Image (tube, rainbow, N blue to C red):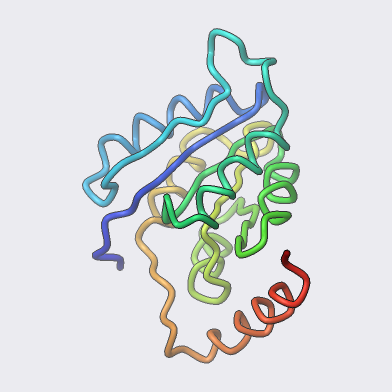
Length: 159
């Protein structure tokens, strides 16, 4: 389990707003979280941004080293993951079960977890985030070379 304190961010579109608010409160109360930034959408204007805008903004913070990990929530999690994965240096995944959340860190060193408010219940969403924060990637594991392949390919095309 992780001993690190994470610098976090969370964001959603209108379809993930309720879960974002719930998980934001959980993150603020989690001793493993050093800080958490709310990247929207705001409850006062939930139609103000699309999943693409929020997902890219969060991923840019990861790529810049300003945060360690992020949680994104939309209807399915898919749009958020696709958006975040467009930012060079970021690995985002959708997870709807504990094993996938675990492997996203231990096998793939993902920095972004995307969830779907329309496809999983609130308690499962909360549990997945809590579990996900407990894992740290081991760069001495056999998975490291697999992640390096992806990183090297990406670096060839990043501007």
